[in-house]
Length: 435
Image: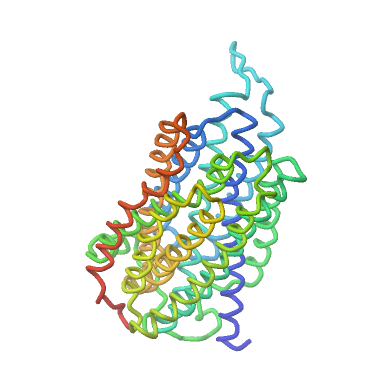
């Protein structure tokens, strides 16, 4: 097959594969409304699960980044898929063992309350650990097939493709909960991961060299882990960009893991009511499309108007986020307005995130350390997400009695947005190495 046609088909397959990862990672954000009703959880119970899982993800990408660079992207992504599949199945199984008892020595325990919460936290955190292999492997693989001048366009296409996963989460999960017990919202993503595994095993290639094509001046070598870490941790741009990533992660995860709870709680929806609530369905239909549009605009704009500069696109996107968050806080009294402003936040946020995670790692570090740099950025994002996962439920529980807790939710993300905007503006003129 022609080289350029093959890599385009491979990009399509990797995008769909990562959509399956997304579906099996973000689904808890929808399902936890059902869990909260079933087990009488407050905001902090879910906050504990998501904060710990994101902390594990943050540590996992630091740990796994150099390993992916060492053993290769194809093997790594397949390991990640097996781990995510197993964790999703175990999450669903908890539904059937909840309330059952077991003995350990002379003591008898029941899967309920804090024990059940701890079990779900451990299993979901394991899922997040294996999810890191998927994210890092795909960044590493793409860096070997696309040159700097092409990466903006490729990143835009890839960023658009993976939003299919968000579409599945936001629209299919509520429908699953309408017609099936909630474990199926874990089992169905696991099934899709199993199908994607077969395609990855059969069709994905590590680099153009496997096709006999030498497409880069930079050889596809595997550096020693010590050299990879030195390359990553001695770069001023990478270190400052990690702070930017921390801030973006706080905003993205602050929205992404809480929007379904916002709709359910703010508008007093009945059990499984998301799928029947028109403003939510409008949001769940539009925000993935907005993120697709943002990805398709951000990548080509970076290449065409800023000569492959990524930071100008990040800065302009963050200005949009900064202007929209206060509007969201003011507009929550009207579910249609809230839906519209949430769509705008996700549109601008995706423009920044597609540049940060899709292009910068390979631009700054080259092919030999792309996944390590991506891991460093991704880790920073999830440290930010873990912090926000701790802060948000504390604020929500504190103001719950007053009945206005959700008006504070968007305001919590303004500070991180300002920090990210300052850093991206400082590096406005920074360009990648043209290899």
